[in-house]
Structure formats: C-alpha cells, structure tokens
Length: 562
Image (tube, rainbow, N blue to C red):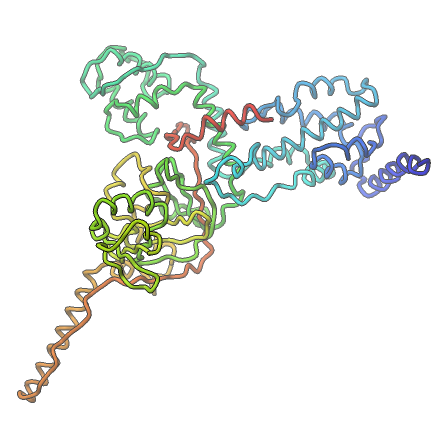
C-alpha cells in the first residue's frame, strides 16, 4: 500500500515531464501552482469525454493560461448566436472563477480546471453533433451518426495553440445553417413587443372591409411586408395591403392568392419569440445532419415540399414534391441511390393493405379491380376477387401492373432504408398544384420524375430524356406495333403478288404493354430527406408550416435538458 501511495504521487509528475518534453509549445504557459492533477479526480468522473481528454494530456492542467480561459469564455458568452445557452456551460461560475483564479486554493483551482475542460468538451460536442440525439427522440429518423472526437480535438487545438479556431470551426458549414444564423441575428433586431392576435374566422378578399384589417396591417408592418410610411390603418383591404399579403404568403410557403384566410392568419399570429424558437430548433437539426452531404446528392426539405439536385455545389434541378401525411410521415434519413425502375409495378405494402385496401375490399370485392390490383397467391397464380376472404388476406400479394394509372406512376427510385420508402412518380398529378402537399403514405412523390431519371442516369447516348419518355409511354409501343403490322402486311402483299394462291397465316402480334426496366445508378449519388422550417434568403425571413408538429416539443427539450 505504501508503494502504491508513492507511485500515485511520483508517476503523474514523471508523465507530466515526458509530455512537456514532447510538446514544447505548451511550455509558454504562465507558471502555476498546479503541475499535475491527481488522476483519481478524473477517473471517478462519469464523463467519458473528460477522462479521454485528460488521458491525452497525461493528467496535466491546461487552463492555467489566462488567455485560454478568456478565449473559451468569449465563445461560450456568444452561445445565443448559435442557438445555444451559455448557462449550459457553467458560464457565470466560470466567469467568477476566472477572475479569482490566481487567488483560489489548490482544491478550487483543480475544480476550476476540470470545470473549464468539461464546459469546453460539452460546447464542442453540442456545436458539432447537437445537444440531443434524434434517434432517441423519434422512431422515424434514421441518421447514421459518428460522434465527433471532441476530446482529441480539444487536446490538439490546445497543443497547436488553435483553440479559438477550433471553437469557431466546430459548427456546421452547410449554407442552410449559415442562413439560420443570419435569420437569428435578423430576428433579434426586431422589437420585442406584443401586437395582438388576429381572431379571424371568416376570409377577407381584396377591397372588402373588416374590423380586423388594422391589426393585420400592423402585423404586416412589423414583419416588414407592408411599408409603414403613408399606410392608413383603415378597415379596408386596399391594393397596397394586398401586395404586402402576397409577399407574406410567398415567404411562408402559402398559396399567393391575396386572400386572407386561416393559413395566412395562423402565420401572422406568430410572435417574434416564437420565430426565434423555430430558428433555434432548426439550427439543432442541422447539427444532427451529416457534415458532408456528398459531391452529388438529392436534398428534400419535407415541410417545404421541395427537392433539389446538387452536383459539385451547383443546383442542377429543383422540383415540387408530395410528402407523407402526419399519420404516415416521411422519415428523415440519409442513404445512397442504387437503381431506378421505369414502368414499375407496385406491390402494396402491409400498412396500406391493412388500413386502406382491406376495409374497402370487405365492403366490395370489386374494389381490387377498381384499383387495378391483381391478387397473387404463393404459386404466382392470380386469384379472383370474388373468392377473396379477409381471414386469408395476408396469404396473397397485391400487385398493380405498370401504367400511367399505377400508384407509383412511371418511375421509382430506390435506396436502402429500414422504412421501405422510395421516390416515385404518381397518378395524382393534380396534387402538385396545391400549397399543402403532406398527402402521401410516406414515400416522396416527384413532380417531374422522368427529368429526374435522366439526371440520375446521366447517359445521353443510352438514355436520353426522349428515350425515357418513349419507354414509359404506351402509345409509343402501340405505334411500334402498328408499324410492325404494316411492314408484315406489306411483305405478305408481295408474297401474294408473286403467288396469289399462297396461304398466309394471319398476323398476330402481342398486345402493346409496358414492361418494368431496372437501371443501375452508376454514380455515387446520395439522398437526404431532411426537415427544416425556417431560413433566411437575401435578408428575407422564410418560414414553413411545421407539418409534423416537431418544433415546439424540441425547443422544450433543448431548454430543459442540459
């Protein structure tokens, strides 16, 4: 035991001497009473990152340098501009200990040293990976997360005298995150005042009068959509106010029709602080998303109902999409596109069978024919709808053959995921004219699927856009069939001309039909289905409806979990 006590005192000193010899740059620190930390102070900590960090430093104090403490406190003090809270990092206590550091007792200096390290590690972890783990919060999120090695990063940042750069660069670099930061700063410039809620239940059209128009005009003025100069707060919905309403509707993703109805009122009734909360939760989400989206990817913003195709930092294509309704949400995920199907057939998934198909089929077995569904047994034989029974329902497959009226439309894009979702065309093309497009069963439907197929295949020789269109068009095959029949008829006519008595077989060709074609995607193209409801664009704030009601709950968790 005496031997163990001796080494517990001597060994850390030897380790410190060796580490300082290897790291001469750290010798420039001011002298301090502390030269080592008893490893037992650290090893009994529950914080694994703290243990890793001090194993890197060989249990040597690192915060004796006033400039280093100043740097960390400067960054933590500006936490609000990253959507974080200084109080989560012991800010007030660290400020106090920092000012008194030289006069602190040895035990308090050790405690302060450990607190500075703990706060620095927590800051790096929150800024890099987010404060919370979405995979523990949501069942329909599937983001493969590799924890950032913040203990090693902090050690190297201190060793290389680059602490300030480290604390600055640990945040997401993606343009959307930077736009959220700008939005947060912009919102903070708005006055913190309550204007009043608009309790409108009817709709107001241009040139109409309403007692609510003055308060609506005040709100439009507050958000900068309506110029305050020369604007009269009358009860008339005038032309100048209509222009402001159109602008407001556009930047909130609403139908820009100038009609003041429920959706416009709901957006108007948000306060500045509610919008700030929205920005904060979206910044947290972008800390969850992959730091590198890839050189070539499709990025879907679910609440905005949009998809962009990006290659080499250039936006190649943008489309409107339809996403899952609240009861069957489109999952948040990242994956790699493997192949696409032209003229896909559709095997109905279990959820849709159970909740949509079977209840209707019980009432009327002809529902299968109405939907163009074939019932296929285990021997791959078709079963007549008349003999179908609910108790045997899951013994069969239910398949819709290729065609324009197929639920998947003319094209389907596959990528590995545990939700069995994909991108596809649709037989409900009217949905894309709607401003609210949370209407699918979880998969994402594309506005221009064949253009997307051409983009993904990127092969103008083998698969130009026109060939893709022909391949998915039954009329193309009908024309080919008719041309072939005419050619055969011409041949037979020549035979008859030479030999009028020749007996020729009738021309019989198979009926024109669409066949499924599976094409492999050769390029490395990622797909990211993300969720964000706010951003800034050229000084203008943009917001989208929180269609899955995630923002408020997430803000509460961020503020009440440290």
